[in-house]
Image (cartoon, rainbow, N blue to C red; front, top):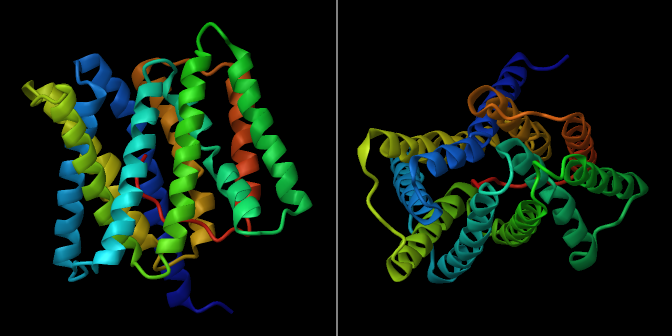
Length: 300
């Protein structure tokens, strides 16, 4: 018979990860709101990561978990932050061309890329089940792309798939780094590096400006708190109570939340092809993650 305290801890961890996944699922929605409010991608992401990093480090300090990393670990974390900035930019760029729900589903193919990288570079075994899962996920994306060519721009899909590949490379690098760096500290430093990247690019390109009015600031604060700092904190805390592989599977709630919010708040339409394709993507991801090691999340 299971220990009641263990069951409670596990249930608590599941709830934390589910809430975190819902928070990550708001990212594409905030991106669409930002576009409508006149916030360019550079400004949105510069303020998002700057405020999000500040809030996360405040939380770490309150819990007594904040500390300075050695120089070698800082270099690794900053390099991962630069990679994170790159695929984050691709993700929000793609939102200019495709619906939020489609973007979230297509982006969620990243576990398939992670597994492909692990097989080719890290010599993981390619099982028959996971090969089938990869085929199912890819077929799901093909259905989404070919289902409604009038509403789904192939260029937007290409951008989001590049973003997913970038995230997969980030995860592969972060898994190696996590052997010596605590997950919460790695996430905190990555956010700082990502913030510096977007602020620097904004100054050089002239695309960075101070948001004006309650609407723009509301979007900035929403994506920084609800879509960044809070879900990262909840996800890392949840990993203290459940296995990372379980957390990765629970993360499939993220694109579902995006799709539902897209329908409710943006009036997006889910066509049969997108619905079936999305279901196949999530099925493939769930199969891949069933016995995977999982990953520590930071936002897209």
